[in-house]
Image (cartoon, rainbow, N blue to C red):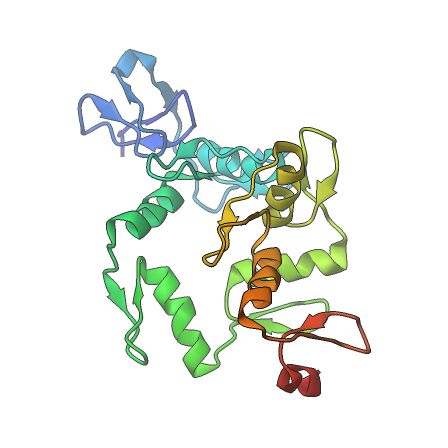
Length: 235
């Protein structure tokens, strides 16, 4: 009962003081005890750290710090293989398996290999049709919390991702990243036929059809490009 807990001075995560030197698994820093901030134990249900941007509260400072990166776009964890950046160490570790080929989990339905258990669970819902997350605004259901969160922005109009170059705001981080390429000139998607580079995968797909000869149609209702007549009939 008299056990003390300490907090990483860099990211706020609680540190296990049974290990010496004291290692923070969140930000990879190592400390001596005198550099750690003593922290009183709090009830796990008590959320004492509020976000100054949106008001959402958290039980730990480290959780708040990770959340704040949604608003700031901060991605301090860097992949040494491809240069991609991530908001937390867990996402980086999961991503790194793409390079190592590590796919420890396999779908029981189709055998597809996946790098982490949570990704496999979401994938399996494609087979079962399970959609456990529902929008409280319109009732639409989704297979993952992430897709629900993206959908909810339609109702709130929230645009938490802003471009540091021009200040333009976006509803999704992917949209911000695509926009940022208009400033940097980066074109990471290359055509396998001619090598031409594109800023977005959709632009690459449309270009590749100039090589394959596949036609695309335009929906008469919404003007969206559709790449097969069958899709147009469904629309």
